[in-house]
Amino acid sequence: MSTAEKETLGFQTEAKQMLQLMIHSMYSNKEIFLRELVSNASDAADKLRYEALGDGSLYEGDPELRIRITLDKEANTLTLSDNGIGMSRDEVVSNLGTIARSGTAEFLKNLSGDGKKDSQLIGQFGVGFYSAFIVAERVEVFSRRAGLSAAEAVHWESTGEADFSIESCEKADRGTTVVLHLRAEDTEFADDWRVRSIIKKYSDHISIPVQMLDTPPAAKEGEEQKAPEFEAVNSATALWTRSRSDVADDEYQAFYKHVSHDFSPALSWSHNKVEGKLEYTSLLYLPGQAPMDLWNREAARGLKLYVQRTFIMDDAEQFLPLYLRFVKGVIDSNDLSLNVSREILQQDPAVDAMKSAVTKRVLDMLGKLAKNDVEKYQQFWKAFGQVMKEGPAEDFGNKEKIAKLLRFATTHDNKVEQTHSLEDYVSRMKEGQAKIYYVAAESHKTASSSPHLEVFRKKGIEVLLLSERVDDWLMNHLADFDGKSFLDVGRGELDLGDLEDEEEKKAQEVLAEEHKDLVERVNKVLAEKVEGVRVTSRLTESPACLVVTEDDMGAQMRRMMEAAGQALPPGKPVFELNPGHPLVLKLDKETDEERFADLVDVLFDQAHLAEGAQLEDPASYVHKLNKLLLELSA
Image (tube, rainbow, N blue to C red; front, side, top):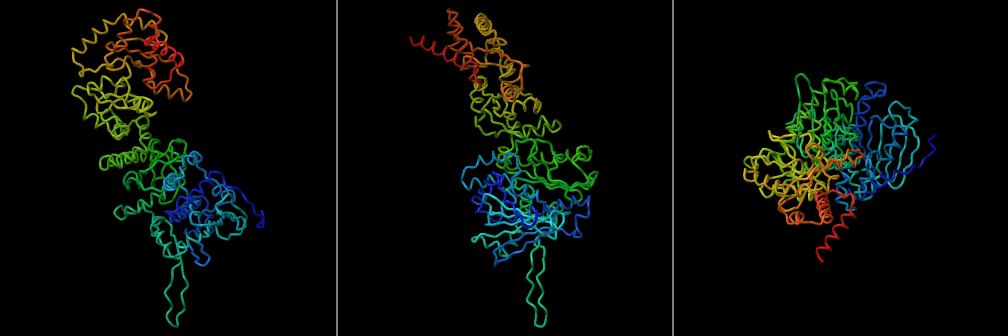
């Protein structure tokens, strides 16, 4: 394509929406555009350094990496240039015309139109280059990829509306230059002092120099006036290489925003230098809000990996287990080789040792946060609790540590918020209580009003209320805590052990004997649908309930597997009757077998509904219920 030819292309739909949103929602914090552009330029320098490990000619005789910012008050422009890796024509179209993030369309659907709320949502997204349009009415990009000829450079231009133009151009030096034609109301960003202060605020930690022209003092009489020279505005040392005592909290927060592209501050961080058998530095952050692609297990995740200060890759997932995929940060190793690849990382024993230590470090950080700042930990749990619940299944070695970090809703206060730890629960256990009781249901409301809780409420025994999809999975792998096993109150025969006195046990045996005939009659009606029928002491207000057999899958897990398309063998519940309930007493006296069968079916369907299940034949249930109501009112 000759320099005269110009191609106009449309933005990807999501990019177009994001641009409009950026321009209208971020006006209260406009200066972040510079942080994002400097961050991109720094990444481009990192990528060149990495590629040049295999091909030194990419430096083109200019190995000193830098970012330069020049201002022109008269033209009202801000220009940012880097001598990093640069972009080819295809890379320009791909990187500046689309938002290559999974779930973008879904994310945009969640926007409310309220600028303040939406600007926080944008923070979950990480907007990078597009932030230029917050202050610029027109943006030009000139880029040449290292290794390509001067004539293969590209000129990209857009006003941030529906489309952008792209054409070939000449560019002698490699890298990318971004020219921002500032809006009339944003002339402050062409002011030298203002721009310097933003760089110091947000980009001091960038490990290559961010340079601006100095203003030399006026020449003395007879001396020649010195020309302005470029000088570094930032300290240009990698923040994680500095001593912890030398780094202020706001520097740590600025660096977090650089590595995570998150707009909100980190909740906590841990900065450690490890020496000995392995030598590495880790700087790990706990985010305050969940990224939009948290639930996409295939999404890019992991730490920024450096080897001996040289950037290697952006998302090295080998250093943390999947359930800690929200952790952001940097790991800088002295032991790995500079030509390390993802495949090598998977087989290197040093990586396993580092993963084990880094995982422990994150769990300790979470433990400290939970102990020292309950409010912040609750914020963390709200954002990442469901992910943490994947931990016991994935990381058996740290099961106890993870269990202490879990939070639950319980019958102690019946609140929907998960605020109670297992240690809290154990400290409140009744004398003689040997197990930790829980109920699992589709929703908190269904769990807290489950008939299985009736005897526990009567006796004042606390029960964990589980209502998230991951909960059944969690309980299958948790098994016990502090020497006490977990017990699903909706599974198997109820045995309260020492919480039930001998008198109560005897009374239960007498009831079972007295209602032998009723149990037999009910069993005949439900023979095809149930594993068995029995009288129970677990109910105080409900006439009946369904119980999963000891070996069967929980109802919640079954529904989840079926929804995922798993073919499962049919499971039959046990039907339990409350012999003291007026409806059951009435049932016992019913002589009309057809009516008896209808009553049993209605009670069976009601027990299904009470646990949040769908009826197989709702029309039949309604028909039988209406028939019984008519008979009662006759």
